[in-house]
Length: 324
Image 1: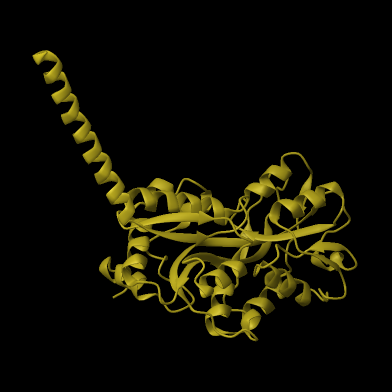
Image 2: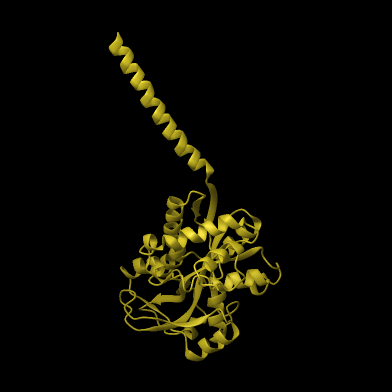
């Protein structure tokens, strides 16, 4: 009987310790504040980089848990952050600039309640056509079926800018489509459209997959077109996609690039924003291999957003000395 009582006593102690440990873990998890990062479609660079970053932040932070949400991209992210439905979002620098200043796409809507967080990596404009097509330049797109980019994204603004400077009215001279990366490439390879455009880090997974089974090519932007666009839109920069980036595309291609930014709701708590930036930068080595674009993220460049920094982000950048 004594032996049975002793076993029961020991079992009760072990159970108590296990429950105590579980209670501690639950309490620790419960203390975390859930925040949402809006990215884009799962085939794009936004989602790949955002998911890898969010995972590392969540694993290392005792304050926040990052939920990575697939969305329709930049403009939807800006709208969701502005309305408070999500706290963080990814966008190209042109979208952030327009939304913060209430210009361009946001001229009628007005200024959005966002502030800068991080400038991550460059994204390049990529207009894809079939190798077998007789389309060799943007001028040849006149009268064609062209995907100008995914809906609710600022990608469309870049494609339209290139077309206009190339002498093509995107409203009247082409049959415009607005599709996701994957959808645009699928319709291109199926012969339903003649060209598809997107802006993403290179190489882009969706195009890599398409080029592995189809003969495709990228259209190069003329020098005078690049010069005209950059002079009017300072957030765009000329860029070269090196030959060999994609299978079967061996020539260098001239295009435009802009930076991918993470922005935040303007009045989000400073400590939450500080924690996000701190964990994102201090655990960079753990996720920079998720995509070749993530390797571009650096403490020397990350604070250079096109709009005013959130105080929480600025606090971290001052602590590490990149802002004096």
